[in-house]
Length: 307
Image (cartoon, rainbow, N blue to C red):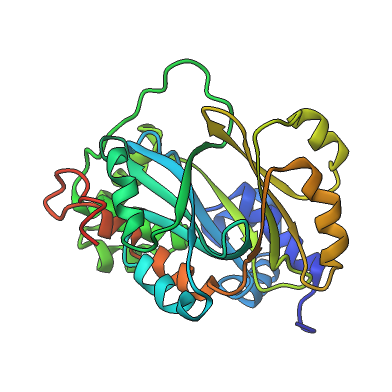
């Protein structure tokens, strides 16, 4: 950690957010930055502390987002986590302790398979609850897309999610297609609105948020709440038919008791998420998620009950 220069790291993040997939030579010319300086900083941080990931519109892919909470005995937590992550329609999991002691899971479910969610979750726990969640309030009817691509596109989506700057030679080896075809595939995903952008971010750098307060609020003035805590990083999800999912990030070094007292009056249900515990499991899961969701003949999604 002592070798990290925060100014250098933030400079690289800024540049990569402006030019997420361009070559260092191209970035150097466009930004008027000395190439060898850029390459030195890039080699120092990229892939260790700095990463670039693709952002997808899952609605265009015919997927709907849910958040689920499952009771799991503490002694079974790791075993159950590995079992759950065999299912690629579960996007991410976090151990939680609070109104449910066990696991929080983010689900991306094909719209024509929503009715199977209770059956799917019952395979992992006999005590669970789940909510449909949106990043923002829904306006009118939402038109969902569907999977209409070959299997190679699923491999590409996995690769670009893990590392949007994956070298073309590696993509050629992974997908079994040549550079012009892969460029066409990426451009098609962008034109179809599946890829809506790329973002650069930092990991493994202190100080880090390794805990979160997870709350379900049915009756709250969300604008007033966000104004009150505008200096705190809070993720907000809109629940259907009513309510909000709130996640407030903090460090395990902070005074948890005082923060619980501060946050709990705004929610009906509260749990503490341990963000660091399943990090490696989630990262490994991410590498092949789309290619496990999609049928190899390209004809749609597999069943969420297969796993």
